[in-house]
Image (cartoon, rainbow, N blue to C red; front, side, top):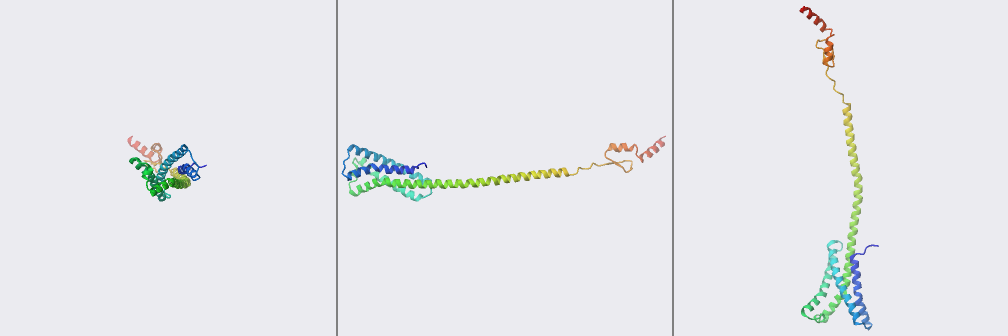
Length: 234
């Protein structure tokens, strides 16, 4: 069961508020006497309910007009009508209090009395209709918001695999490039160290200077030279 909206509650209250006055009107039409105490209680309940419904309905309509887009112009028109009806019902009472007269004395003409009575009878229905319309506009706003949120969720969910696949592809490409660089580094031939030629000129070469020095002791070209040099010294 859905949670009742404020507009529906105010509309239901507006209908219930008019009930006691309708009871009195129907009993008077059937010429059924009503005790003054009972009549007073019914009229007090009707007056309090009317004030609550008109005030709460005006506030709810103003809030709805400021927050929704659906039927905003129609809601503004209904709100202005409800404000005019509430002001028209209140102004004669304030004028009567300021001048020290009663409300019938202020509404001395028949046309003013009939207009005031008509507004008092119709103001509840106007407020109830406006609140129902405002509740429908609020429900349409919530539905559109929910549809937008539900449409955004699949888009985000579809974007997540694409982002993950792109990240996996970039990671795989980085790993492949690293492996290729390591393979090129491993396959590159190590530089061959420079060989040391025999200083005596026999044409042989050696890996190090020490190996070349050891060769000089037995070099076939150097040994005759050393022997000749020793013979000269002797």
